[in-house]
Length: 301
Image 1 (cartoon, rainbow, N blue to C red):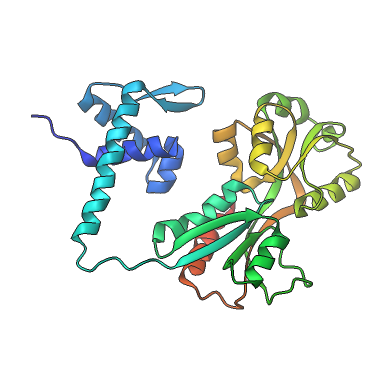
Image 2 (image 1 turned 60 degrees about the horizontal axis):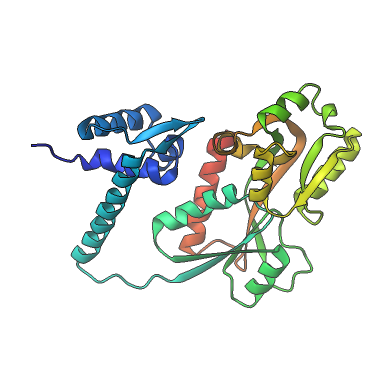
């Protein structure tokens, strides 16, 4: 009689949910060979292929999609069982609102929010907007914390304290074709190169414009974008080069196929948590800060 190995199923479910083995490895804190071996054993026990290769990644087969739906239901029931067996009823989680500046890369925001979500101590609400608007909402106590690429300006009408979470070097990325074309002779090769730049009021844009001027580079500005997610998609299509934190290099290559041309000397992207507290006291903020310190150190150390 065949029995289902739920440990193998959990690895399969995580890979399918995350969309890649690499991201599942980071989430589960295991090596890629470990997950690959578990998936092979599960496929062997089922007698079917659950994934197939597509480009540089993997996607679910048709039978794999059916298996994923069953796995979703199984683990949902497992969570319900744990809740039902708890000796004391669950207390309502306090609401905690984070405002993320729209100029921050979504991948960085995602990494910063993960420790809070995993802890389950609060009911997290994340809103996106211009830093000035988010700080104004924080002054009205509608937002508990603001994530931004710059500290709170002195003129802001709220007692705000800016806590540096981490920093990363900035690199220029492009599709494989554009990277091969403009990497030789970097950074001088960027003169008249097609660029997807941040909008003019973004902190990174100010730094880039100053660097271009210092290097005597006049880029061909294809588009100015306030949404880094859109910039990555356009960059993936080969429509232009873009400047992004090098801390995201692995994700950019894996998810978007973007290749680094080179790093910009003395230029960094900083990420701040802006709160009304001089010291970080809220458990959710402490989780965020600790997770940020660990992530930045692991990627840049």
